[in-house]
Image (cartoon, rainbow, N blue to C red; front, side, top):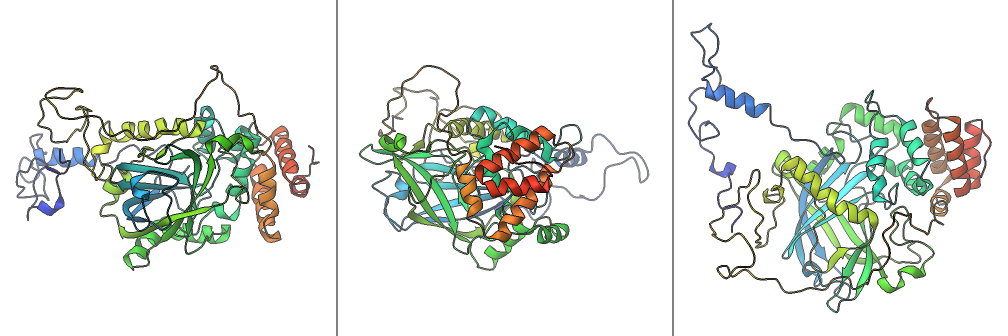
Length: 492
């Protein structure tokens, strides 16, 4: 089946206006009325259609990552990684795969300024010969919580107050005070990188641990890292206020104009890998999304480069209706990472809510390789089908199973239970290490930002002391600085 066979396109525009059903319109500037000054008529089909279409132009915005910008390009393998994965698009150096990338802010609404302090999304859709691979991440390598049950809560805590619709720091400081594992994420959030200067100078991370499987069936945990070739640059508060006050779409504009001028943004892809059989040999939990894999212990390995060399043709069709659903291809699989497992459902499910059950038929989301299944009908199904068989198996249909490909071979056993990840020894260490790696002026800016957050009048004495305790355990001098600014005593 050809998903583009009867697809409407502006390439077939008529030289005059028509209704949605194709009838010619001879006057598109005046309503049909009773005489020159009389009331309009309900039979004015053009007007009813025009107004009804206008009032339905907006679709539900994403519950997270609502504000974003997209661009197209390619991913090229530069280093041989065939020993790690049997994925076709990684088969050899020089192989190029078309991609579309969406950058976004995580918490704020669709029309919010791109200068607000917020994690940034970094999502890549690879249109491979084996189907689409969606690699969805952020510009931070870690997340605030490690258990998927807490994911809706942490997002709600960062979202505006449901009563006043004001974003207030006391809410997320209250919630995260129950989660000392959030410390490393805050060491990124309140660092200078919390406001990237634009999308081109921003890192990307897969955050969760995936699995790579090679042809022999050997599996490894993997984390993905995108490094911009033009370097990482951030924006301090004064500049953010100035830029955001004059242009709330500065990052979108920068991306669009850079590509239009031939200054194509580029990132290098690196990976970290851990053998499945070795994952219990580390003093950190590889499946914990609140900690980073130390690069001196698990070194980076180069894979390829990402180049964005084409702007999207239409913002609504290729940004608002662009949908990432955590889809996989042979050679890449999920791991037992609890956050990743839940995201694999949440991402696809939110697209079914926003765009409908057939969102993968939309051109920007549809695979560019031949594909076939019996997912049948539903809202807005515009796939041209002329088969008589819509079930499997059938002696009247030659469709068969695809060739089997390797899956992670680990054997799982255990009882049903709800419990936390046992290794929690890095709740404070990595946050302290990151703070100590900064220059003194950068440390001072971090302290000022966190003190400002703690100064929210609704932050209680108890919550304030908890955070002083957490930061003291991460770095004693940091805890003392925050305590002295808050006229409190540091405690462990």
